[in-house]
Image (cartoon, rainbow, N blue to C red):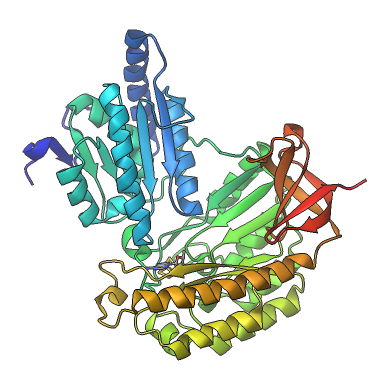
Length: 487
Ligand code: 5AD
Ligand code: SF4
């Protein structure tokens, strides 16, 4: 496409003769952060007010972590963070795992346009998973010309460079890459919580579950070097972080392709040794790769929280095979037995999809059977969403909406009842809670989590945030507890 067409600038490198631009990362990005900072300083002087930004995150923990990187870069460029989207730069870090996620974003872009009409300085950027889809970039170009920058999942780290191009060329930027050529370490980052942090261990996914768009938008699986991960966690611990969440689409296959041979179990053992870290969580585990050694490591490592999120997706062998999940109902159930034998108090949570193409009543009953037998502590239940480009979307036997709705309601009733029963079992006990924030509904309460990830509210104030305290769980309200600091 001609670069001047529609005033859009595609996947370009800089047009200006910038002989001093470093070719290595992260030096190149620091160079552009300094350049943008100068532009921002000039604008601040001319306008007589700060330039503000807001990053809105949709979707998973990976996106939340990427947003911390985006915020870190913008703060370093001299922007100030704004609480709301009526500001000078809004970035939507998007999710596309289900169709309603896309619709939500398109709806909200309209609201941003209202702000932009009042503020000539305002820039709007869309990044993350949606941006990797051609249907989305086409739609933005045609119907949302006020979006200034679109970039994908593989070049989040390039925000400063993209922003510089936007200022320098005064053209809209669409810079979406097919794949990631590298993992760029050591960029600035602004954490949302001072006491806990996500830590990427793998990027991308190679599993190609037949319904899922993630492998297409996040690319092939890449593992970070163990030394980079450990160094990052040591730095976090030195900076006051006590809980880390190791992140990957399938952390259980961590280590593939690394020079230093390391499994996820090895990595957990190494993280467990880091002084200052008190809680270790991880997300997500694929049942096909959950090894005996990982179960052993979870049981041995005192800092690893007794919680495992193990997506089931379906209880029907026929559907699981079609989904390309590489396990059967019996294999899943035997894994659960193994885990519960090794770690009796573990909380098990899961993801389940209802209405996968061709799902019969009998298939659905198999799913209910697993739910009945496992008794999950909680389950995220999803209505199957057709994602263009995935094998499942091409099937002609999509399940009618009313059938899906009925199954979804039946499933939800079961998982809710199990969750409530499980939670009741801890009522009356005194357990450690990491306090995370002042309660959003009631400022006299603070909210935190048990090691097993259950939410607890208790009377308290800001001074408790980031501390692990013993709390007596007085009552259970379905999915959360009300408690009091133990004497
Ligand atoms: N439709 C519904 N749910 C999906 N998930 C992934 N893709 C789809 C889809 N097309 C669910 C899976 C996954 C979770 C993150 O999202 O259950 O584990
Ligand atoms: Fe999607 Fe399957 Fe990869 Fe999870 S493991 S991100 S469901 S393809």
